[in-house]
Image (cartoon, rainbow, N blue to C red; front, side, top):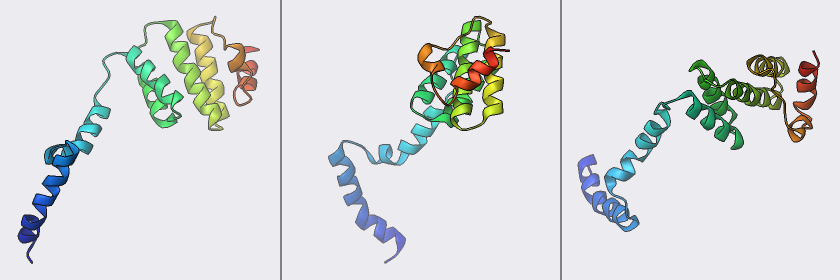
Length: 139
């Protein structure tokens, strides 16, 4: 049977299956394209990128978190506190992935952005980044 005949035989079943689920054939075919496009949509502000980076971090998606956090810094976060926060989360990512020199650098960047920057007691107690933070803070 030729490809066109197979399509003619299978198409009604495909359409029936899509109709039963409440999705059209177009929805089924375009789902991945729409999802990917929504992920590529640029965020409007550096602050939104910071929020997205923190959300990715909390979901343990460190690759996307790092991208969003770096993008927030490149796009000029206005607040020194926000800048320090972005650097803090980058430090957490680097320490969590055993990139200690980068972690140390990001804690230094956080302190440069906001000299009053401090980790919470719970954050400072973390064995992955607490010692690195204390060594940078103690300088």
